[in-house]
Image (cartoon, rainbow, N blue to C red):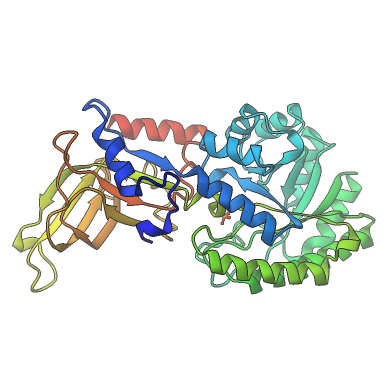
Length: 400
Ligand SMILES: *Cc1c(COP(=O)(O)O)cnc(C)c1O
């Protein structure tokens, strides 16, 4: 990724100039990292979605980034929301999104969260196992259910089919249990996983969903919702276009308009990843001495310490380092050096990048000295803050 791939919302500023302006206006007491959000890119993404997938109603996956401005913008533009926890749903309730614009897309729900959805009339939710059906029967029998099916996500960067989704052969069994419990199953959903960005995988998943619709019919259901999940790229405009063409084609074949099936989706990073940049300060710098150098012939090597952490915005680093890169914002010293970027906690596992080539950066000594930009796809950065325990974890590390 480079700076140019982010659209500029203020034509008179480059992203770099904007960051420098904000950074140098900070006082010494406020040296936290911060995000810059480009709402213009979010609006562009919504327009593009509407023109390329007019049949598919997007429900933004809040776990990707729960920034209130992002949520309010999407809500104003008619986008719905996919929430996976009570905290995420609370954020959506706060911006007054209509309950019909929310899906509780977590196949394994906590009872208190389920009761929260009932109180707020958020009826649409997913399931993929029989014990969930009994739980829903007890806590929210009027809920509208989507059965999440497992698809082959071989080749994707992160896999979800190991964690969620019912095998297609087990669909009739689960649907029969739902029928016996007199539950209201209204359709089928899937999630292709992430990072592959290939239209074929969507096409075959849509075909498989058609099969599940047939099973539903044979058991006495008349499904009218198909949820094609997330997994759309936020950076690669051309790839997105190709994927959309495949999806349109597969929908026309397996779910033609005459069937009157409502098509929805749960894009996360598509809306958020290019719009958000995280700006961090280099708060410490250590030159690694010659004895510590591993590779032969290396002249110098640096360790940097920044005001961010694996236990903060980088919670996803362990699993998913797609589209994340670091760019120095202010003038750096000359020369690329092998560098490691460490997080602020004292944990030895808390590093954000190892053995990368970075321009030599300075430490921030005053508000006029260097800041290091990390332009990142802030995938899952809110996952810690969207769960209670995560909040505590985060707080503990910040006090450490
Ligand atoms: C994470 C997630 C998404 C969003 O995935 P992206 O790849 O960011 O689009 C959508 N739906 C569900 C159920 C998820 O868990």
